[in-house]
Image: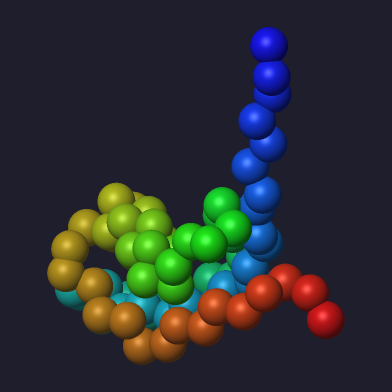
Length: 70
């Protein structure tokens, strides 16, 4: 049996959203995704979490995504 290993890349993100009732939420964290994932896929993953938490619609006021290494 062979074991496949998937390369992963860790990103640091900061996002600020406004909910339908005017609440602002800023959060930051780490997102580990398979190497080669797109910025759009990372953004959609984070937005899906926020919509699940706050419902829709939400407006994105700020979004930053950078590799978590110097």
